[in-house]
Image (cartoon, rainbow, N blue to C red; front, side):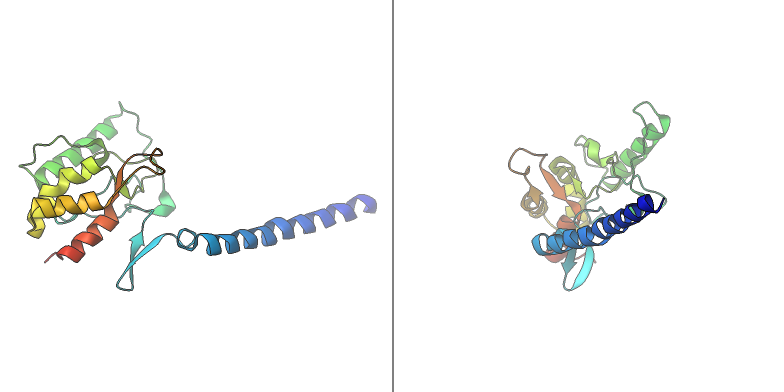
Length: 193
């Protein structure tokens, strides 16, 4: 029995050290050297204050800010510890109610806006944490944001264009706008009163 126990214990100890200590330490060192921002959460700082992460959406509900996608995490919106989609199917009445509530909120915030409402403004992403919206969703909100901040439509539209990221390598993904970056640029242009 000892002839089997000794190699088994040695293998457990060796592989525990390799996979539990050496490998994680090596990956951490490589990540910190090669990708320090990403390894530390892609945190965004402004004037020495952390404003959030470029990878996780935030709740913006004031008229003078661009609004992101809905968060499916609850009860706290954009809670990364509770990341998940709603799992509602397209025929689920709860999904229809949530979409209608968001449509109503968008129309109440900007009653004169007659543009079609982009789908990403009324639905949550698969993770419930999406920090980005489509350029169409950002442009839909330009009039409300410009009015609330006392800016011209042209000024706000220009910010949207400046903060639109193109597909990675020109082919991967869709054009997108990071809501936190855009709202920080708005605050630099003209802070809310």
